Length: 92
Image (cartoon, rainbow, N blue to C red; front, side, top):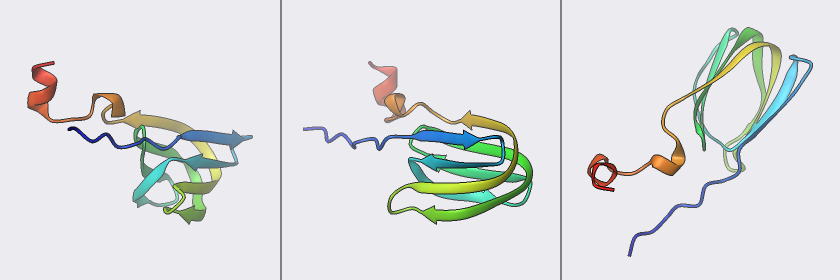
């Protein structure tokens, strides 16, 4: 029987382009003052801006808080609903 992983909720709350919180964070891929890349439940999230800082990060709860000026939030990667082996997706 196929076992399905439960997907944790993912949300972004941002205030005045200066501070925000992100839930559903699985990992921090990279970060510096102009770009933070996070692996989330909904794919890879790239946050670009200026003076970006990760104020709090708790991967156990899947939460991150960022501060700094945000210019863009961009998702890349696959939709979690479409995850699976390539062969499985080909023969669906």
